[in-house]
View 1 (cartoon, rainbow, N blue to C red):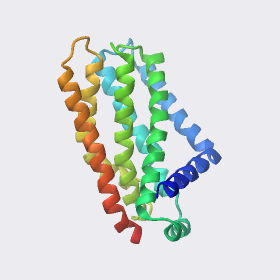
View 2 (cartoon, rainbow, N blue to C red; view 1 turned 120 degrees about the vertical axis):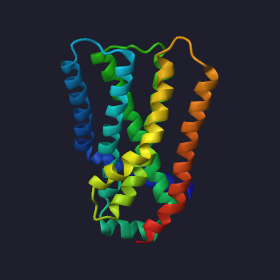
View 3 (cartoon, rainbow, N blue to C red; view 1 turned 45 degrees about the vertical axis):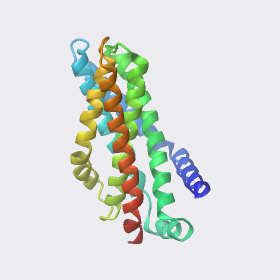
View 4 (cartoon, rainbow, N blue to C red; view 1 turned 90 degrees about the horizontal axis):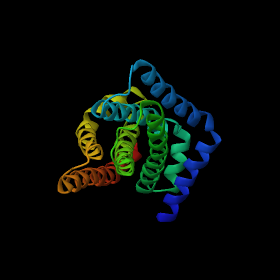
Length: 219
């Protein structure tokens, strides 16, 4: 199972490498959005505004990055995958690939935010770690939404319609957790509690995707 999952993951990596124009397009979208925010701001935003803008950008970047995950898979290709692999292996490979892709986008976005909008963060490494956890959480949810949307005549709009209500509790937890990186004094117990909640929600999404995806796979 692990070998087939890794093989599917490498397949997605190879396809992404062959379609670098799509990857560069998303990078351009990220850079252009942050630059427009920079031009719209008269001065560097305060910590709360900076944090809110960062996660709003991450949300829309994730939608654009993960949306093509299942939508690019044609019916013929899906029939081929159906004959050579199990649904659990296929969805795990997709979750891993989208998590990696979102990590790259997250690091690029954070670097551009520091460059154009300043760095109000007290602990940059802590915020980087939290942002990586948050980026993975966003990618997991929207990967599952992409799988559902692919069965509805590949309707990309359905990803946003289904995803935003589901992601809101997780996003609020991540934003609250990331605020601890702006404070010089914080409650360590609360940080670990919020981190545990976010990780538990990630595990829940992975488990549910493994349980429910085979029903989509049969269609």
